[in-house]
Length: 610
Image 1 (cartoon, rainbow, N blue to C red):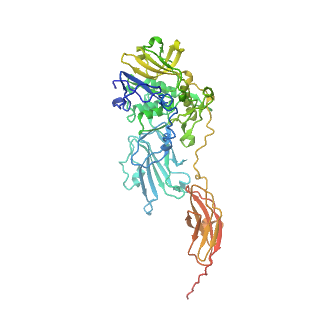
Image 2 (image 1 turned 135 degrees about the horizontal axis):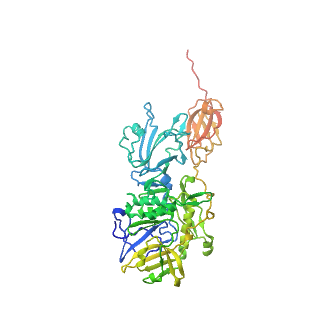
């Protein structure tokens, strides 16, 4: 146990002290111990970090993390090839991909020398997971049977399967993939078990139609890590935000805290709040859920800030315990008055104008939009816009662990209301300050300042040499967390993410087809095809006209431009030509043609010998 109360990361309130930070071991690995001359500090990590309530010198706008750094999402669904990469932890349910850790090609069978079968192993998470659900090839769900074999075109054609995917959840007793062991020529053995790693093995048989654009990006929807629930004292899969945060505190890849360092009552209360049912536009949902990916290359403080966005949370370490408060109003635990002040009290009645906002925008991860970062409807209050001279002042709050636009709006409203509660009190308390901790709600009675039972959240707690406690108090209130379904806006205006020219859309057919013949050649031209995903144009040839060139004619060339010359033909020969375009997904346009012409050279002389 640490001998002093720990400083935990960035704070919601403006702090005047400078910290000397150092990583410590033991049960709070990764936390930051702050040694301040003359005192001990207790603060907390807020879901807002310093984005709204930071120092006055900070920039007035929120720092965008979701769209600029992968939602901490766009890149997490991308398959990567690199020798060294960080581990990822999946909480809740989300779509992920990961590093390719093995790739091997081989013939389909012993009768062929062509390396038409490809094996790819992709690690999705660095732990055991609850389930691997849908498999995506690029942005399309791959239909699989119970054995992992594709069941639909183009990955199954007639009775031939061109894609199979084998799922492994990463149990401690996990065995090596038997299909890979049997087909890797000794490169993947029974010792390659990847225990406690969630991964998929994709076996791909080359086909021009199935893999016209090359190796697909492979990703999966994963129900991730099972987490400990102090209410039941068992571990199970859950998207409860409080339980996911608790798991990160306890995990050896997180802060490695022991249960003795956890205020379980606060986490039980927070978990119950997260599980509460609230109204949406057309039904109900849990108050707060946590669904997303933790990249262990990030700093623990940044990880916790991101996870806390899922529940509008505030996490504190004080008195040797981690405590969590989520986005719901707590009744004051204490009332302080003038008699409790040991020195002058400083009241800041208003924020600086450039730190005020009246509109909040941002992104969340939308399962309805290919699990990609999607803007939630902006939240605003007309009364605040009017107070700011009818000028919209917008800032960004991205929510990398939120997958509901209505939940995202509720969290954004809390952030907005916290910003508009502008009073901040620097209260030098006497020993009564030892009765509270960072994160607590207290009431302030100070008639000379016009304060009567003003609810405030303790955002900083500093013990001084004279056994006093300097408190930083930010205005709070029940109406910060209140909302009605009428506050919510539909997501109707956000377009779905659609891949251009997907497997259902054929490319543009060639136009302007023409032919000119010479002595022993024909020259065929057509207009440029505007499609960005055009792969090539097929040229088909026959000695007679036909209504079915695919059956009767021969495909002679794949052309990457707008013209082609057929040389070394015989004189006085009439030939018919058709063209059609092919895109990188393997889609083909209708045939265009025929055009025909006759070479002008001498007719060949045939000698008949008897």
